[in-house]
Image (cartoon, rainbow, N blue to C red; front, top):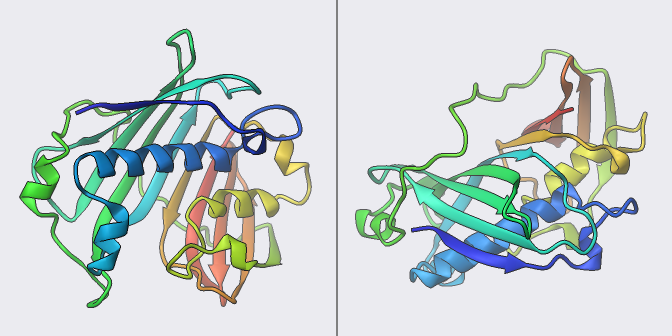
Length: 238
């Protein structure tokens, strides 16, 4: 089942150059995904009350054209796959008012038991309630891995407003932190065409983070650490 919404970005979604921010792109897709889950009876809030949560493990986003101020966006999302497993794939396609593709994305989720702190197999009835589709946005990509060495490191303190209801750093904040680590340029002006985020461990409330950066032939590889333990790997492509 393909689920679609029309989204009109808010002024806060844009950078000073009038283009939608990378974090806003993730926030928009996250919001539409939550509404999709709600529509099939898989309420995120209700599941959390029962001690079960969908844990995001990876984002992959390709930007064909970055939306500018005032544009309305058509956001479509769907679950894909053939059978329930520990990992579920959700794809996204964002088009402009003319129907042209402007953003493609894929998210990987795992179902997590908050009481036992372990992954659980996705129930077949729950999985089939989404009426999964066969269409996929991307081919398989190599797993993101840390570099042996990095060019630079920056330490940043976190605010309470950076945290989600589980007292973990919200998943959309990682891309903004990665850009903050690029201190040799105006990171807010960057116009990367693709980025990936792999989540390894949650950043806890009250911790500082260390952002390690490495310039590559295609962009940057960034490792976000907490207490000097790797929590996320971010890849930015020009």
